[in-house]
Image (cartoon, rainbow, N blue to C red; front, side):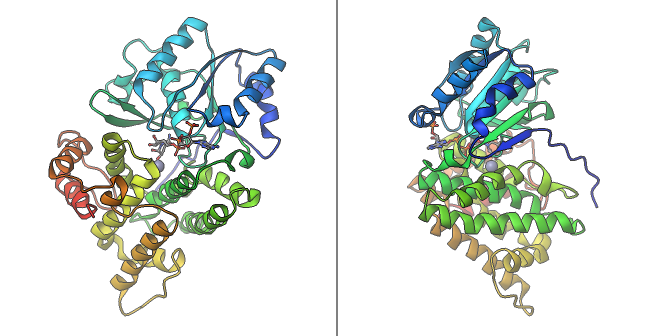
Amino acid sequence: MKDFNYYAPTEVVFGEESEEQVARLVKKYGGTKVLVHYGGNSAVRSGLLEKVYKLLDQGNIAHVSLGGVVPNPRLSLAKEGIELCRKEGVDFILAVGGGSVIDSAKCIAYGVDFKGDVWDIYLGKAEPTCMLPIAAVLTIPAAGSEMSEASVITNEDGDVKLGYSNNMARPKFAIMNPRRTFTLPPYQTAAGVTDMIMHTMERYFTKDDDMDLTTDLAEAVMRRMKTAVFDVLKNPEDYRQRAQIMWGGSIAHNGLTGCGVHDDWATHQLEHELSGMFDVTHGAGLAAIWPSWARYVMHENLSRFVRFAVNVMDVPNDFSNPEGTALKGIEAMERFYHAIGMPINIKELIGRDVTDAEIKEMTRKCSRDFTRTCGCLKVLKAEDMEAIYRMARH
Ligand code: NZQ
Ligand code: ZN
C-alpha cells in the first residue's frame, strides 16, 4: 500500500445560510483588505456579488474588485490582478465563482509578493515561497479548486494551459450554498459532474488494489454523482441533489479518494491541450478523451475496469469474459455521457474533425516538446498520447 499524507485544511461552510459568515471568516483568516475576484455575469445577475460586498461593508472590511475571469482563465487578467493587489495593499483574495475564478485567484495570490514573472511558476522554472491567503464562495461544483492545491492557467501567448500545485494554495475557507447552483445551465451542470467523476476516476484507475476503503469511497462518490445529475437536470431547483453534487465536487478533489493509491491524471493532461487549443469546457473535454484513454490502457489492470463496470456502471459480470465486461463498462460510461449531453469524442466536442496537424501540436504540447510522459496506470509516451488523440477523433 502506498504511504500517504492527507492534508485538507480548508474550512468548509456549507448550506443555505453559509454566505452570511463571509466577513467573520475573512477576519478569522487575517484579511483586512480584500480583492473580490469574479467571472462574467452570473454572480452579478444572481445578486451574490452585491450580497458579498454588503456583508464585507457591514464587517468593516475594505475591498476592491476585479471581474472578467473567463473559463480557462487567462494569465493576462491574473497579471492585472497582481498589479491591482500591489497598488491597493490587498492582503486577502476572495474568489466568488467556480474553478476558473478560484484558479485565477490562486495565480494572483502567488504573484503579489513574487519577484519575477508568475508564469515561471507554472512553467516549473520557479517556486513561490509565500502567497496571499485565498478563499472561495463557490457557485459551480466541478473543478474542486475550493479545496485543492491546484490551479490551471491559460497563457494566451501560444494557447498554453498549465497547472501548478502547492499545498499553500488550498483555500482557507470555502462557502458553499447549493441554492446558488440552481441557475447553472444544464451543460455546465453536466460538465461539472463529468469533471468530478473524472477526478475520482483519475485516482481509481490505478495498479494499487490494496486500499479497499479508498476504492469503496470512490465508487460511492461516482455512483452518487451519476444519479444526482439526472435529478438536477430534470429539476434544477432540487436542493437536496444540488447539495450532493456540491459536496461531491469537493470530496472528489480534496485528496480523500486518492489516499493510499498512485493516481494517474493522463486524461486531464490530454484534455488540457484540448481546452488550451479550442477553449472548450474542461469537463466536456474530459468526456471526449476518457473512453479512448480507457480502451487504450485497460489491459494494465483489467480487473479494475471489470470492477468499475460492475460496481459503478451496473454491468452484469460475465466471469468468462473479463475483457468484454470491462468494455461494456466503458460503453456504459459513453451512454451516460451522451445522456447528460456530453461528447464522447473530439468531433462531438468541437463540432468538426480535428486535423492531423492539430493532433501533432497537442501531442507536442502534452509531451512538453517530447520531454515528458504522463499517466501512471500506463505511462504514456508521446506516441501513446498521439494514438489516444487519434482514437478520440470521432
Ligand atoms: O463567468 P460566469 O458568468 O460566472 O459564468 C460561469 C462560466 O461561464 C458559469 N457559472 C458559474 N457559476 C454559475 C454559472 N452560471 C450560472 N449560475 C452559476 N451559479 O459557469 C461557467 C464555467 O465556470 P468555470 O469556473 O470555468 O467552471 P469550472 O468550475 O468547471 O472550472 C473550470 C476550470 O477549472 C480548471 C479547469 O481546467 C478549468 O480551467 N480545473 C481546476 C482544477 C483545480 N484547480 O484543482 C482541477 C480541474 O481538473 C480543472 O483542471
Ligand atoms: Zn478536472
